[in-house]
Length: 514
Image (cartoon, rainbow, N blue to C red; front, side, top):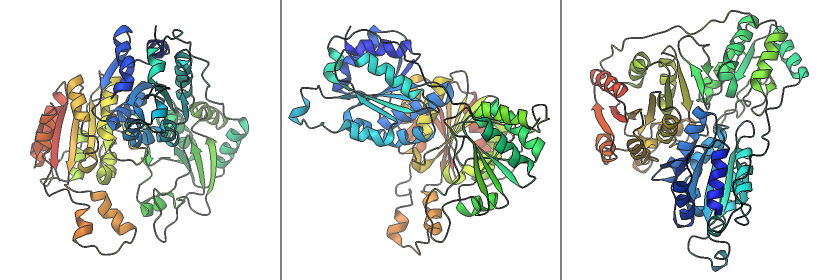
């Protein structure tokens, strides 16, 4: 058994069942070993950003890590943007990155680079295997590191000769750190704030936006008059009819400031204190009011559900009735195609237990409100701000949950970053319906140009924000990747195409012209 086979057997023994891959020469022994070891589904991505983004989507829905297989430093570098998003989503991921054989490094071959240096800013754990005998043990350590709360990015670098030389066989998974319990003092302090009668916001993320944490938060809010508010972007939110309704903190700074203006206490529950995405002239970076006290009930690393259980017990709120979202099926009567009208159509047609992947950017707030009263669903968002996550995220989510419909709400400009994900969806026969929100521009940058006070613009600046010379033909692009597609220029056409996509069993794309 060589080092590569011992590593794969270690991965499968620890429950890692999927490998998203874009391999090269240095990873060929790992690729060959995949045929000798059962239990690993290998999914090819044609660009490393698809690979890392799909591993993110898989982990969000499977609640366990997938592995990636990447080629040397440049291959890893191609996948870093979505590693950044995954790290911000607090999900577990094990990256296997090939490198030159240990004895070949000194020759400075063309693909030589500092792979550890590339990996460190986007990983929580990095290690280069020293020899084939340590590979399995190193792999087990990487899995344990990835599973450390709240979920971490582990990158194991595998020199080629550590794969082909003899290994020691699979290694057992070491003990994995559990979420730390929240202290009684923090629970008591949170209860005191909630009993004060002053306006208090429970600022939620992570497990607080999924059951049973979501209902516990709802009981606490109902019994104390506190307001529930989610971070602007979250890894996974359980929402829709029959569930506790939670608003999202708006992305624009002025709207976020308004949403928090009345708060006197901000209680962080699996979240971080809210800050602006960027610095804007004459606007604050911190979004909570100056006279608002920010306290932490549970950090993302701590046992958020246990903290909410203890707080509900302290407040005698465990039996409190919880108001839930009612089912809403608004009729889309608008003739003009707008993102708001499209959101109403999606909300009305969304099937029960669907997974919604949202990288709608300028249309995000409309789709959040338009799907709030839809059938129960999971909602996955762009967590790190690096665009190009939507199509890969939907790909990974569909592999994790093959029995659930995935709907991807995708801005056109960012779709081009990782458009190769459509090919993977076609190859794997994934049940993903993608809606391209086609405004033929980087519309979000137009808004940011005004927000930062950059002043008036001319042709050069405007050209940086338009995607119309030539216009992207999304129907041809999708079909060229093996995905059936249609174009909607009216609301009637969109209604019809969405019904077609949702009834299909494989990937389908709708080019919605806005």
